[in-house]
Image (spheres, rainbow, N blue to C red):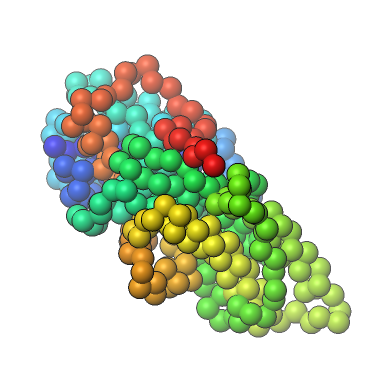
Amino acid sequence: MKILGIETSCDECAASVVEDGKKILSNIVATQIPFHAEYKGIVPEIASRMHTEWIYGVVKEALDSASLKPGDIDAVAAAAHPGLLGSLLVGMNFAKAFAWAVNIPFIAVDHMLSHLYAPHLEHDDIQYPFLGLLVSGGHSIICRADDFDNITVLGTTIDDAAGEAFDKIAAHYGLGYPGGAVIDKLAKEGDPRAYNFPMPSLHKGDHYYDLSYSGLKNAVINQLDKFRSPENTADEDSLADIAASFQKTAVDILLRSLFRAAEDQRLSTIAAGGGVAANSYLRDVLSKRQDLRCIFPSLSLCTDNGAMIAGLAYHYLLRGEVSPLTAAPSARVRSFKRVQH
Ligand code: KG4
Ligand code: ZN
């Protein structure tokens, strides 16, 4: 079965055709990043307008590059939540119109569940249950996955998301937007032990697996003043040191909660997703753990894409769970349970 997956929850306008939840026949991603970069963040109004202009061309390219026509598609899926409402509406409404015109089922899926599904597109042997690490610009979630749609949140951020901290720090240091990949690259030339940035102290109980980035973000941003002061002459080396030290602390915050959860839940497989899962230091540390199997999607499937939407939708279709054409988007995370400590 060939499913067209459409992803417009944020600033990527993406469409993909995936066969039987596995085989990627096409995967087109048109990024709006250059159009938001001058504002150092995503402008929702610009995002939804650009999706409106681009969505037809992106879907057409996804079909053309798979040598398919609309009539060859068995179902069409779109991200319905969480995300920017105006952006989600564009992808959902295009998908609904496509489904109506071709007379095929429409399936609304959760963007975060789709990120967690992405590793399945490249690996056949991921067994449930496993530990999920979902880290993006908007969310930071450590969860237990018992099935593709049976997810229990063990820990989440109590303030900023991990990617948001990378983005905000990069913006303050004038490194551009988004900040994750830039800081990652710069950190390779720096000393991660040059600065001692604080780890949040969240104790056993409600916050045991939770994450917090506002303290670290403020400490690194305050460093800017020191960095600029006359007695601390700014040079490229110290900027690279700040990037490396921040990145190490930011990733160590994730790893501390992740390793606690792996031990307590007795789970030895970790599947990561979301833009921050592209981080090279995170990948490096996790890949060296002999006691854990860490599965990372390739970089193009870590960040937002339509293949993860189409792949996940296949499993709903198998169960006969399709969505009405009246389905509405939602800005908030749905479909996840929160663990009771
Ligand atoms: O999942 P994603 O493409 O979009 C959503 O937020 O849903 O994630 C984008 C986030 C941005 O905050 C970006 O700075 C971060 O992922 N990111 C990274 C890296 N590449 C992208 N963060 C750390 N290291 C990276 N290499
Ligand atoms: Zn995402």
